[in-house]
Length: 97
Ligand code: SF4
Image (cartoon, rainbow, N blue to C red):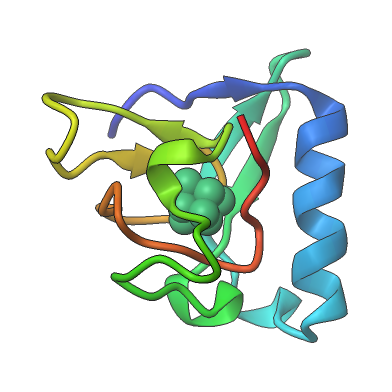
């Protein structure tokens, strides 16, 4: 299993607020670690309306949760959403970096 990524409790709570607001808490899966070392879950793509294209000029490559793994256009991952993420993707948890 991959080592969990660390994000701040504040960023995690903000993400949870969006997910809960979407009524999707029950479909969460995966996990990541908060800065204090406690474990938290990543959201399923379907729960956060992930799409492989930008929305209103917003995209994963500009999001504070995006984890780049290669070049500018290489697929990466996300601190709060499970699975591979395109730098051109978008979801409702988008937060400007
Ligand atoms: S837009 Fe969503 S999927 Fe993309 S990096 Fe941000 S939180 Fe992750």
